[in-house]
Length: 428
Image (tube, rainbow, N blue to C red; front, top):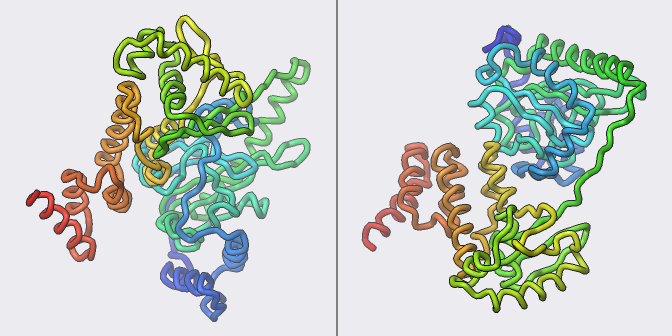
């Protein structure tokens, strides 16, 4: 633990149990006396969360996919001060700092999440990852979202979080303002154990926010005669293939459901960005060289794409896509890479084009399935593993079931069901 984070000398005034009970009373629609023992700031945030129809155990949405995230944060005003944030809040060995530092935009979307490797693996399970929306009206009471709502620094301790999945953690956050207009630029947050909500932690986070604002102003003064940077957001194109026999293509605000064959071809071209020869693509689609069959299918695919996604009309020699096409399978794998196992599993709607027998699609399907399985077996918590064990991919997976049995508490009522499933598999 870095010396910047000192543990509190006294325990919180209100116990976590009392706060949790008050939270449950509010969710039940009861305004009993226990709520009086909860800080007014938290009470008001809970009520705003209820009014926004935030669920008490929901996962945040991933508002920025991997390609969008990289492009967006490169042009964000806080990108130029990230080294300063790291030096002030993550001195020494950031990977063993004992806290996670997140930087988000003015809408509450997290752009950077860095710090202690172990804590990032745990908080990633509740969706605390880059690209996720942590605004108050999206996930309820939390330091980054509530700090943006109130436009001031906030500390949220354990059970004060509206979302039960977040209640093991405590956090301190402060908004960052444009030094000239005073408009919101974003938020910085420190998340961890009780050390993340000490008075010293709040002073440090507040001071960091002020230092950031000063640095932004100095950088502007230095560059006031330089031409403004050219920024262009790439048009987003997404192919939804998880759990779908007929893929859904979303591009430029429009969407179209593709035929099974067109879905297979577009997926293979999205995976092979360098392009495929007519012979290689026909083998991946039909299982044997069938160039004469493939060519008229490509003509029909081009005609289908022109009205909705002209920028994706495939080029020839080799067949390739002229623009990037992301798939929901890639998004799910990106979540796994960021440690957001629970969110990744929720995003896994099923196997890739499950009814397709095209060899190239089968290869993609098995790669996605095995990557998800190995990541969850290696790193996921027991709750996520139990949820995975209920999916069609893992319902009869003996290794997954045995690991769940090993991880669940000795007195968990779920043990009996796991034992019964394992015994059934052994009989079969």
